[in-house]
Figure 1 (cartoon, rainbow, N blue to C red):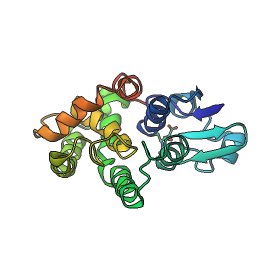
Figure 2: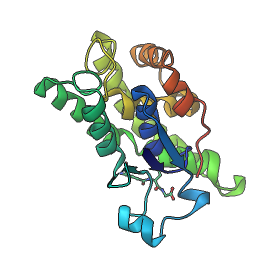
Figure 3: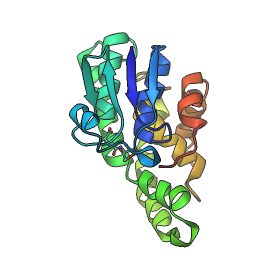
Length: 209
Ligand SMILES: N[C@@H](CCC(=O)N[C@@H](CS)C(=O)NCC(=O)O)C(=O)O
């Protein structure tokens, strides 16, 4: 049995739960981190020395943390040639977009979560949201341009490359005020919304901590 430690409203946990849903794996998710705490629990730190979420454990014997690494591992194991491309160059392309999403695209998300959902209204910083939108808009423009000639990030088929960017794109499209129009990004988002696991683990969850 696959266990996942992490609160459902974390974007990094959502990558993993969406991936597990796509792969139709049996799993158990344990609410962890944020308001549930547990980050400093010694057994948890043994599994994940960073204390962050998500962490997975497979068959009681193999633990892994870092959401992108977990998605790569599960896709390589359960969907070789499918969600994990078998051609090494295509796989490298997929991993490139996964890393870009986690490193470059992600920073607007903590600003949105804090200032739209978590902080008490009197402490929310509207300017931080404006700045986050201004910084992220050109990055979503890059993704929009990439998607002008393909249905999914790696071509005609949905792959693991779509998972990190897709998780963030829901938050962008659903919550960014005065975002620029990105027709290819929005068409891809509509395609992702045809996938029940995306709707269940990403679109139906209100961000929080
Ligand atoms: N790079 C890590 C980041 C993990 C991370 O920072 N997770 C956040 C949630 S999105 C966290 O653990 N925050 C503290 C908490 O939830 O208690 C990953 O992708 O797994």
